[in-house]
Amino acid sequence: QAKDAGRNTYRYVTEQLNSDSLEFMRITHELREAVKCKQFTVHFQPQIELATGDVVGAEALVRWNHPVEGLIPPGRFISIAEQTGLIVEIGEWVLHEACRQAMAWRRAGMPPLLMAVNMSAVQFKRGNVENLVRGALESSGLEAQYLEIELTESILLHDMDHMLSLLNNLKDIGLKLAIDDFGTGYSSLAYLKKFKIDRLKIDQSFVRDIASDPNDAAIVRAIVQMAHTLNLRVIAEGVENQEMLHYLSSCQCDEVQGYHFAKPMPPDAFAAFILGRKSEAG
Ligand code: C2E
Ligand code: MG
Ligand code: MG
Ligand code: MG
Image 1 (cartoon, rainbow, N blue to C red):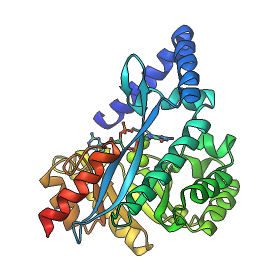
Image 2 (image 1 turned 60 degrees about the vertical axis):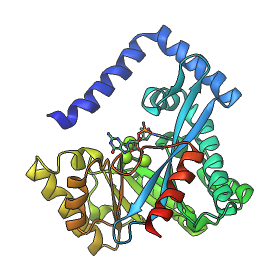
Image 3 (image 1 turned 90 degrees about the horizontal axis):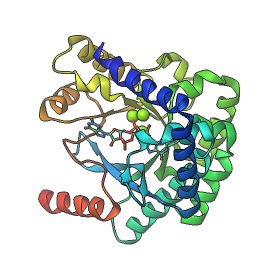
Image 4 (image 1 turned 90 degrees about the vertical axis):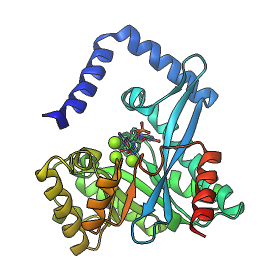
């Protein structure tokens, strides 16, 4: 099936890297240098509330600013960073940078946005996420309510009791939790309700085929309905055209994110995008 093709390709690529240990070592070495020299940058993609058309959030997405190759997308290094544990330091840097940027925008007079940051399972296993979050909020001055951590379903399924207490501690700080790529894992909504999740992000693979695959269309509608009964908000990712937008609207999906509005952008371009929409609207 087409939907699995992407994931299989990805698995194939990681297996290739694993089997080709020289290549793996080369990238690991370069990645270690990159961590030391802070060769990373964060791009931001707007999240739009459907009811108002307002930009209400930004997802922070890391890129590796490679001295020779230029900007490398996360799909090419996050897996290696996870396998080597380097993701702990990269993730720390990303969270600090995202919170710092959120406050810089606020100081520049931009309306408050929810800053969404991806967090890997490895960070929960090997790092101290609670300390990290407290530190990033403290050093940036960002209020916890404007930070959202994106997790994948598999993290919750793996070590449930441990994750329950970890995530409860995070919720006590006052931040928000989102489930990324929702629908690709095996968790049920009833199960998710044990965790204090605020928002579901419907995976792009369902959104991509909304117009052509009646099953995906039905799944998306059902996810939104069930999520709302459980008081969870829903954001759809990978919204690329008017047709998708229209269908998601008809499902009462709360927010959308995708190329139809904007690709992930460097901070300046993001700020210009917000300003541009404001002057359009007003
Ligand atoms: P994700 O968290 O599910 O992020 C959404 C990805 O979809 C991003 O890719 C984004 O650029 C892309 N995207 C957004 N709108 C559209 C659209 O309309 N169409 C299509 N085809 N794609 C769209 P990106 O930036 O390459 O990131 C890929 C993945 O890398 C992320 O998926 C996330 O799992 C991971 N990642 C990115 N930054 C971080 C990070 O700081 N920490 C960790 N642990 N993972 C990260
Ligand atoms: Mg994400
Ligand atoms: Mg996602
Ligand atoms: Mg993902």
